[in-house]
Length: 115
Length: 114
Image (cartoon, rainbow over all chains, first blue to last red; front, side):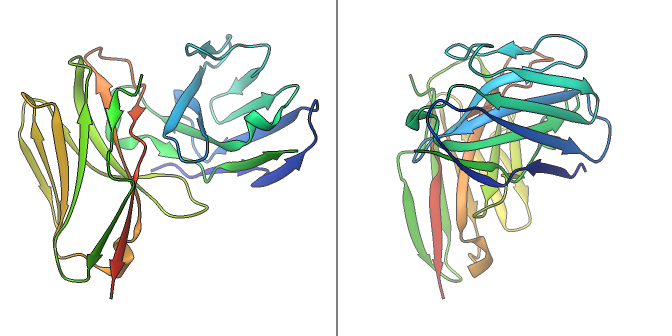
């Protein structure tokens, strides 16, 4: 199994600012993902973080708003840019290996509140 | 468009009884289904899964049933224990090997009453 940590665990930010969330995995993983869970909603995939190349974004999410870095096989960052109150959510990263559907592990999440 | 739906946002069950959580999906390309359990301030953890070639998978107190024609799956927990109180998400993966993108339902908050 993989242990995933996220920093910060929570933050309260002002409108128009940006926040970078870090995700650290305790072992090398091929695949890392970023999800958002808005209040009362399901987990929605934002993007797949690709090591050494640009992230692959899902429909409705763009790089300018959610830039992602993946410098190596154990670390990724997600930046929420130019925040508005609608960005208030829990942001989760996950990690896994190809075809190992049962073994996608999630971090504890970052609870973001935008005022 | 919510492709995976959990129509019961919450469910309360007496300790020792059976908990049944339901999930419906609309995308016929979904081929593999998973249930995740989430405690407050923690990420979801994998619970049990089922492939579309099966109609039932059992793991201890947890059983998942799949009715592919009805596009419906359910999670049974027997007997229910207080530690089962959590939010349960069903998730689905399409027939596209190498695509590990999970589509989640909205979750059902299960409360086990002692």
